[in-house]
Image 1 (cartoon, rainbow, N blue to C red):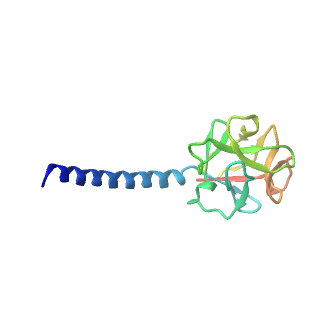
Image 2 (tube, one colour; image 1 turned 120 degrees about the vertical axis):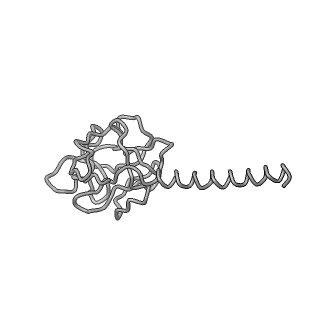
Image 3 (spheres, one colour; image 1 turned 180 degrees about the horizontal axis):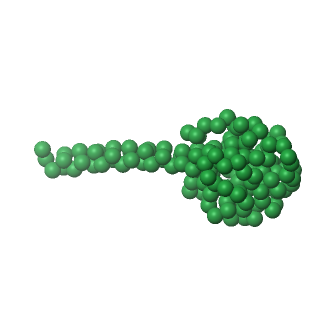
Length: 152
């Protein structure tokens, strides 16, 4: 076999290997993190896109828009792993959205990130994250709509 043919074959094999490796890494990153499930609706916090209002959707751990990581005091969405998009509260009794991290409205207080923890999620801009019936913010209630479960 000529050396130029060997180089072409080697380049093709290397290209195929890198493609498979990239696909595998992307799939693994898409499902890492945890889900945030509302205790009242049983549905999970979902980010349909950047600068869009958050929704609650049927839980599916294979959907990256429903997977989150805790970065400092921010809840970063795994569907946007390179862009730093986080849960943001706009104000009391207003809808929550996905926004660029590192602003006061993206800083949250969550008392536990252990698997199965029942938590309230709070920030100074909007109050408690809850389902009202859309995902939004407001004052604490005794209802279960402002409690969430952390699911790994």
